[in-house]
Image: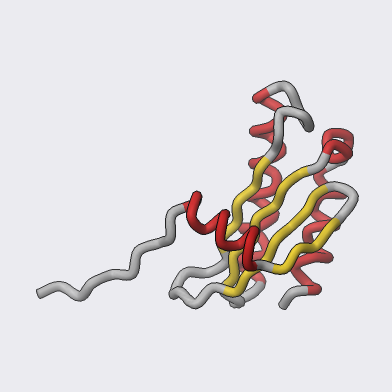
Length: 112
């Protein structure tokens, strides 16, 4: 009989749990919610961008990809198991990749 592997939590359920039980950190670009995970999985990140921030789907997806790449970069640097939900604000549509990276780095270093 094969051992039972733990299943990753669903993205929708994880997002709700982190937003209601996690610690909120506010920036001028986004709001990030953190919650320690008690699972064998490393850092999990969810990035959301509203149509009010970017009306173009191409720009929204680009911002999400940038956010995910920054989260995965910090995932390699730290061994802390936690979930992060990043919700971008209207001011983030003018921000560069470096500005977003610096703001997220501050949050990750503050919550280690």
